[in-house]
Amino acid sequence: MKKKLLSLLMLMIPMLTFAQEKGLDQQIDEAFKPISDFFSSVIFFPVFGTPFVLILLVASAAFFTVYFGFPNIRHFFTAINVVRGKYEDIEKHGAQLLYGEDGIARGVDMNKVDDIEEHIENIESLHSDLEIDGDIKDTIRDESHEGEVSHFQALATAVSGTVGNGNIAGVALAIALGGPGATFWMIICGLLGMSTKFVECTLGVHYRDVGKDGTVYGGPMYYLSKGLKEKGFATLGKITAALFAVFCIGGSFGGGNAAQSNQATIVIKELLGLESTAAGAIIGVALAALVGIIIIGGIKRIASVTEKVVPFMALLYLVACFYILGVNFSLIDDAISLILREAFNPKAIGVGGVIGVLLVGFKRAAFSNEAGAGSASIAHSAVKTKYSASEGLVALLEPFIDTVVICTMTALVIIIFNFGGAFEYGGDGTGSVFIDGVAYEGAGITSKAFAQYIPFSNVFLTVAVVLFAVSTMISWSYYGLQSWKFLFGRGKKADLTYKILFLTFVVIGAAASMKSIWDFSDAMIFAMVFPNMVGLYLLMPVVKKQLKRYVDAINLKKEAIEE
Image 1 (spheres, rainbow, N blue to C red):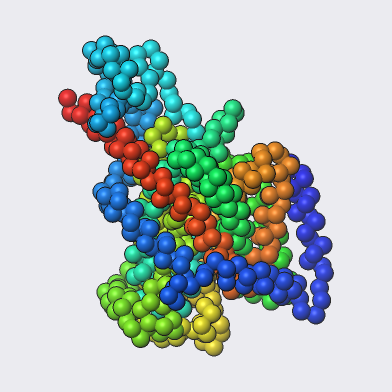
Image 2 (image 1 turned 180 degrees about the vertical axis):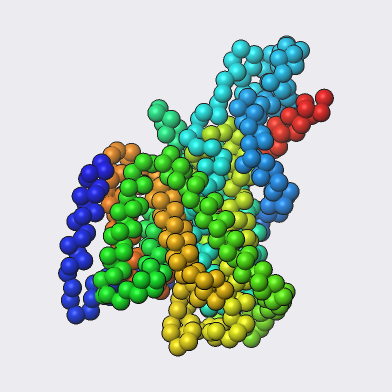
């Protein structure tokens, strides 16, 4: 398969020698723009002047936060402990629970043989009227092998799909359009999105399919089709699952791919001073070759790469941000004050007041952390666990890491940089701002901010953007492939077809303009929200039951340790 993939990549190279008056990059952009404009107009239809999909996302995130008792706060440290492996013994053999009709958990610690012997008769007598979850004496087995990756690997893979150029380029775009106030609404959206992420990733694990060879297939396609069938909505489940799969494939081509290669190309061209009309396409082919080599190996290779690259680059990026904020420590409170003031400024620059700033912030945050889109549940469903809610709790860390921490750091750096009047908020209204008479957009703005304080930061940021882009692309290739498999089967030919299309969009993204790519990317990511939300609302009682089941298991374990 590697030879086939590389040979097809080689077929793209002759494209680069073809040039007409407009240049190859411009030709690709003009061909792609009508497609981008169409999908953007369809998905972001307004209700009372506001895109309905944003209303749906934010209102749903707030509702889930209340319905599940603020899991983003109450279970935050539990989530960290799960990633640390503190409850790994529970995952493997742990506290087996018995549930009666009253819903109250009764349990014994299956790791304590004496406890088992003492209660075995009671368990057998209750068998007829209680649902037994797990195995009893002599039938205990390690069910955690049902999965392919660890909690940390699943989190790293999912975070690599979210922590990307949305954090570097997306934040810059939000501030360029909405000013400093957009940062506040990004943070709010990130905090609320933690609850949505918890719901969808719990369902992703709960309704996953496990093949005979141990390969895991999960995500909204499966909890929509299987979960809604359980609720008596089989037809609705089939339709929404198919729609999600189609949109997810589009999202993998757009936000998870083309938008990433687009921003990587911008910083590479700026670093190397490339002005060729085919430079974008050339860089795109090089990126496609790199991504193609990695994605052939499937989720295990993807996880092994992302668990190393993502923490390293995220830490390095944060260190750089902390350094800049450290040397400008006296300005941090001024930046925070400006963020809060502009978030509620009815005359906010460029985007039409408070509502405009709010929408810009929410839109960029939702694009960055993807809470509500359902994509991350595809990666989380591959985890080794027997408690679906355990991975749901792990998943709620994603929006916090992505939006509350990394996006905020980027925003503070750009705002402090602009205290010197480097550019005018609002720019040209499309996301570009003028610095020293030169137009900059996305990652280019962040690059200028870093260059103000760190020597050779353009090299560092270029490496960061490229690695973030590659890690996001390989994670999204997995999301899209799982959706492709759901629609077209699990054969090798179907896999190869998808991967070639995916790699083609790497080149398209590198060559097309930022606006066309991001409009298409936004449309595809947000389109996934509609079918996904149907499943989240109808299946949220399942999530509540699974959360109770896992929390009870942890509490039983704690009681056993205390005794």
